[in-house]
Length: 64
Image 1 (spheres, rainbow, N blue to C red):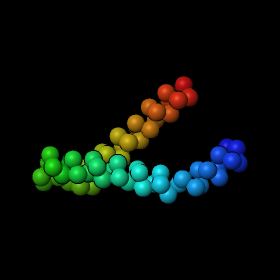
Image 2 (cartoon, rainbow, N blue to C red):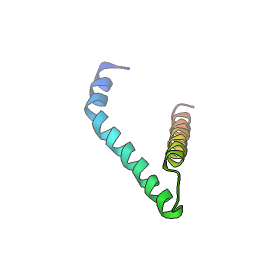
Image 3 (cartoon, helix red, strand yellow):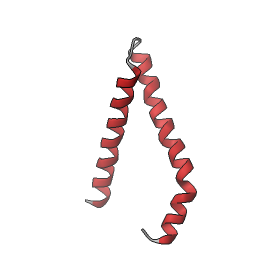
Image 4 (tube, helix red, strand yellow):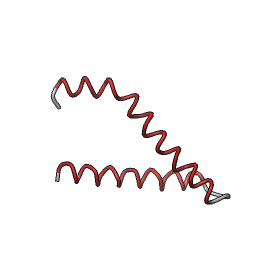
């Protein structure tokens, strides 16, 4: 990665982390509303797996 892009990524890293955490929390809340006796660990694994799939799809669409 070019140096200038790496510097900018480092500046944005904390915000990116916070944004992804908010996304996870959004879907955790939805799972909690829809499934009262939810296994939170299982739900978290499912949510994170779907986020990974979404990122793979985005990467595929961006780079072919």
